[in-house]
Amino acid sequence: MRLQFFKYQGTGNDFVMIDNRNNLVSKNDTKLIERLCDRKFGIGADGLILLENAEVEGDDFKMVYFNADGNESSMCGNGGRCLVAFAKFLGIIEEKANFTAIDGAHKASIGNDGIVNLQMQDVSNIYQAGNIAFLDTGSPHHIVFTENVKEMDVKEEGSAIRYSSDYKEKGTNVNFVEKTEQDDTFIVRTYERGVEDETLACGTGVTAVAIAAFNSHRTKANEVKLKVPGGDLSVSFKADGENYTDVWLKGPAKLVFKGEIEC
Image 1 (cartoon, rainbow, N blue to C red):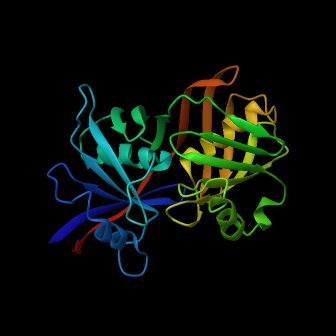
Image 2 (spheres, rainbow, N blue to C red):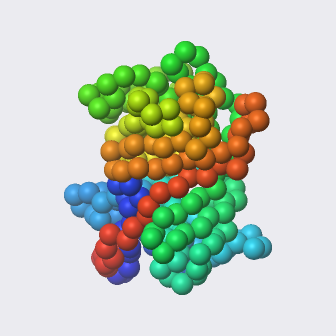
């Protein structure tokens, strides 16, 4: 079978996109998905996303996300933004979208400049202790506020936390964060489970960082700028105590190339 695919990236977080409205790809074919994401023997990506027919009234499409290891995973914020751009490319939407992912319903908008605004889930139940935080923004995130982030070995240090006894079998994503001289700006590097390495950006990760920074009084801004290795993102929200609503992730999403692969 020859399979048509599209490669998208959002601040360096890259994804294989497949229009699966005709069910060409089985969601149970873990080996195929892993091979497509393999950077040596496949297309190469941090994850694979299937765009499928909507199952919820009022939705434009459904999002099914897989990590590079071939396993279906929790929500991916940058992947969701890229999927909105893909849906526009396919003519499914124009400027606004409604879709459902594994963590529930999402709204989004996309401009002619390729900037995608994606509404994330409301957030509560934030654990905070000193320079450590943990919260779930559609995916679980351990956050370490530290210094000299650019000098860190993110793969080694992130892996140690991801596989620690604190998180047991499920593991967690790990974010290392440094505040800049600007009150509303933070540098973020992320170790992603499923990829088992550092990625150039993580949407749910920067969302978690923005909320944790505000929650711990490291910033007074409710629109936070995040500098990741792949570029710049921003997160805005409304805060009521430790409840965060109207959470939006904003950044670019771009088509890199399209092609066909023999499966």
